[in-house]
Image (cartoon, rainbow, N blue to C red; front, side, top):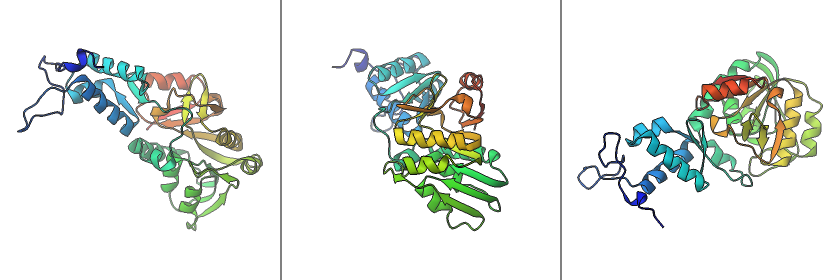
Length: 284
C-alpha cells in the first residue's frame, strides 16, 4: 500500500514539483515520486556502498530533509542503515557476498585505499597480505624492485604475484573457502602462529568503536586474528561503508591496529573517534 506522500510529486528546493531525472517524452521534466526516488537512492547506495545526504539533495534537486525522510524509510525497510551524514547498504550478517561481487562494490574507494596503503610497505623484509578484494588491489599495485617475501592466504593474490621475480611468494595452506578463495582452518592458523612479519595488511568486513574488527565467518576470523598477532605492524584496509558494521565474529580490537586506511566517506568526526581508540586513521 502506498501512502498519499508516495503518490505526490516531491517539490524541488525551489518549490517546483520536480524530482530529478525522470522526464516526459520530448525531454520536459516530470515529477519523480517518492518511491521512484527511493529506488534511485538504493541503486546508488548499492553501487557505491554509501550515499551522502547533501550529495543526493543536490543530485536529485530536493531538500536535504526530503532525503533524510527517504533514508529513514529505507532504513525501516531494512535496506539501508543511517550513519552520520548519510547511509550505507545493509548486508545480512548471515550472507557474505562472493569475492567477485565485492570487487565491484566501492571500486574507486578500494583503489584509493590500496594506493595509500603503499606508504606502509617496507622496502625489504616480509609482509602478510590477507585475502580479500581491497587487499588484492594492494597486491596489484606493489611496486617493482622490492626485496620482499609476501605471505598470503588468498589464492588470487598468490596467482597474481607468483610470476614476479622480485618477490618471494609463500602461500598459507588450509581449506579454501569458495566465497572468498581464502585458505582457512587449523593448517592456516598453525602456520601463521609461527610467523613474525614486518607488516600485516589485513581486511575486515566491518569495523566499529564498540566491537573492533569483525567478519561473518568464524574460520576466517581465526585466520585474521592470527595475522594480527603475526604482524610487527598491523595495517587494516577497509572502505568507509564498513564503518559501524558488526559481523558475527570479532577478531581484533582497534587498539591492536597500528593504521586503519579507509576513504573519505568516513567523516572527520568518526575518524577522530576511531583514533581515540589507538590506530592512526588515513582517509584516502
